[in-house]
Length: 127
Image (tube, rainbow, N blue to C red; front, side, top):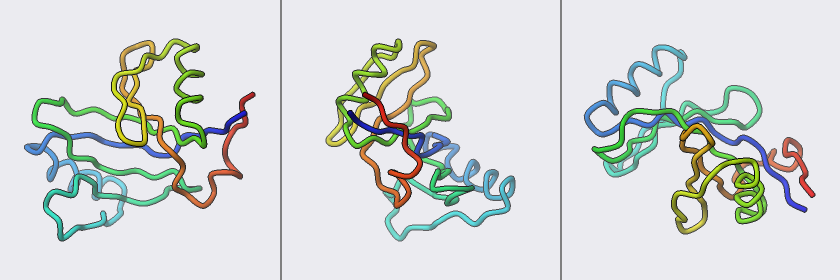
C-alpha cells in the first residue's frame, strides 16, 4: 500500500526565456514570485493556489523546449512509478530521490517524495 497526489505544476523554460516567463506568470496570476540570492537556483515559486499544490516556473537546460509538467508526490516513489507504468507511463531517468517519467502521450512528469504538510489528508491510497 502507498499513497500519492498531484503536488505541483511546473512551467519549464530554458535560460533564454526564463525571466520573461517569470514576469508573464507574475502578471497573469497577480502574484510576486520568490527570489533567490543564488543565480543557479532554477525555481521561482508563486506558492499555493489552494491546498498545497504549488505553481513554479523552473529554469531547465538550454536544449529543453518550454513545457508544463506535473509532479506527483508519493510515500513510495518506486511503487508509484511501477503503478504508473502499468497504466502506460514509461520511466525516463532516475534522479537521487525521484523518477522522471512520460505519460502515454509523451509528456514529462516527475514522481517525487512528499514535502507538504497536507500530503496525507489529500493523497489517494493505492493497494
